[in-house]
Image (cartoon, rainbow, N blue to C red; front, top):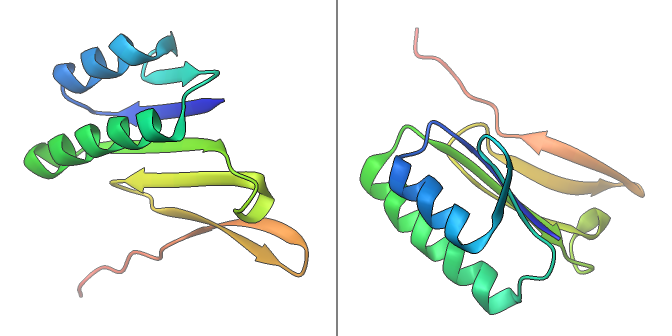
Length: 101
């Protein structure tokens, strides 16, 4: 199962995702059987559009037995999340954002 969660994305991004996945809630898209190559192509398209527009947040997650917790995660925008294995416990780590003083 592949899931994409979006926030503040352009209408073309929403339309593109809706053309390849099911929108189960506003900004939440799922596909039960996406091949790796299709998933990577979808990510490439939304990543290119993200770089053009900015100000958005997109998270993609899918089953991946090679990753900690068996789940792959990619993030554009904030907050960046990384799954880490800490002594057998899978944790979600966010990159700390600092403010200039």
